[in-house]
Image 1: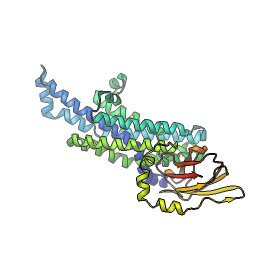
Image 2 (image 1 turned 90 degrees about the horizontal axis):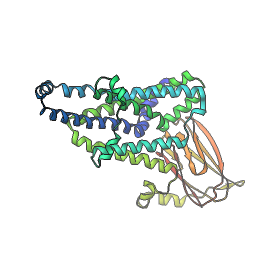
Image 3 (image 1 turned 30 degrees about the vertical axis):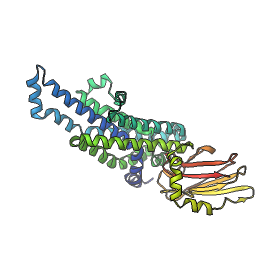
Image 4 (image 1 turned 90 degrees about the vertical axis):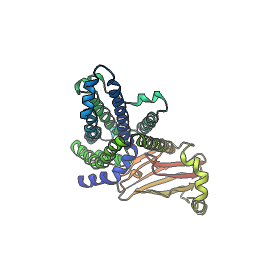
Length: 370
């Protein structure tokens, strides 16, 4: 176990992969809080018209109201990352203690990925003021939390980011899942906690940069930032939902909708025509898929219906989502170690095109049954 290598993995590929599915949560909560900040400032201005006009005017002249929010810019990011670190350390501890019995099923992971996508979409609709119903996406701390933490603004800055930071254990990226496998294999709770902690610490700088930039940019560029953030959140939501659809082999995905255009302008129409069907050896069609950091090879192959298929997935120094291989149509869902080889045998009973992918739907391929 090399914790330094695990930290570097989080700092590079892990941070980017996790940002794709979890970054929207952090951006959402900060954008929502900034929206609330603007509303509170407007409320302060209205309060100037009351009997306490002189008191509030003095506060605003001193900049106390604005400084409160300036000082809170770092709090949502810190609480999000701290909760994420603690939750993953606890997860790593129990993974090392209980092993595979604690690992999340594919269905649970996809459910939370869909929840994350819908949360980001609702946040975007709220920021764009599409409908008042989307204001319910704001996560409000319970009353007792507001009493414990002096000041409503502080309680909001602490509770919502911490809550969402904790929930990130339910939306792991592929690299996080690879770290979970390492934690399981240690069969040691302390080492499991150290692995997950080192990885999350590695991902933290990128999350911190995005979080602080979101908070700071939204101060002076609120209107423009709100629109940009909203469109980015919509894009990330669509990307996440499309990933779920790809994993479950849905007939309706972005790829299936755009395939007539992309297929015409790509080289696939020539390469696929030249590819031969997988040969039958001793009554079995043997196929090897290489899972690489950049995806799968081959990304397309064809087999005969009714003939058993022996599918072998291999990795060689792979630290990306591709190591979490899913072929849902044939009941395959597995995690490969960085250098590994696993084989599965099944018999395709119907013709059609079936998608295999990483657990996030980031990397995909197609097996066509003829």
